[in-house]
Length: 301
Image (cartoon, rainbow, N blue to C red; front, side, top):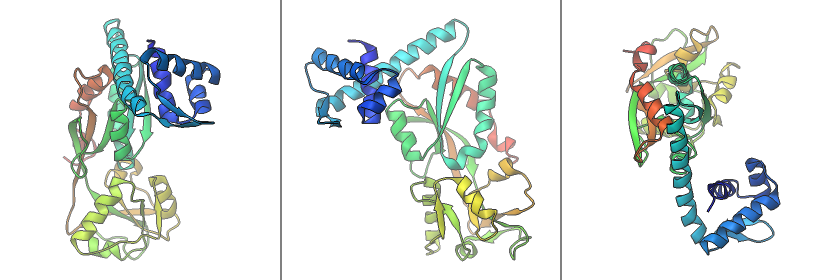
């Protein structure tokens, strides 16, 4: 059995389309179909339900997929381990980051790149649920996400900082100049918030619920860039992580005011698969993260 065929099969399972999978593998579609057929013959089972197009994996295919992920991850770990012995890590490190943690991700990747200059980093802006799924499927080496609210399973956790919350409003408005705002006051604002597929929004809903409040924003987005675009018009307000002060500094047209009653905090940190031994990329990133004090870097310690 060729590992190359297992890799093709894993990509087909991800793409759920033969033509797209062939492009992702950089091979022709007949070559991909032939590789899957060869794999099925070697294993003695059908892996894919075929019609005129890809329909699904068979139960046997789903079982083989789990084994394929593990074998391919072990192959990657072996290659990275050998590269490290030859003079350092190289290759691609894949990091999933929730939108709320994007303002601080550079504080983690900068020292990592300084220590491992031959590694290229791929950053994926995804939800916490996607981070869980992609860690399970060996599609990510690590994630930067919430640790406690909806905890991930089968991962190592390294706390990095506590997220606080601010009301973001147009400068010069009636609330500009305030030193704090209550959650009850914030509920009455014309809001633009993250969509409910994002854990940040579910956290906000929970805090509002403590006061018996239900928030119905005028606009929702799965990206903070979409929210910032609306803030710049002056017509909307939002609730953003305190780390946005680190990213944007003192913006003349946006005021950031702490939310109180309660001053809620949420732990964010690095997560990696708990399999043993840890993959070299994940182990190297964990080692780098342990040497950081993000609370101090954000001016909060």
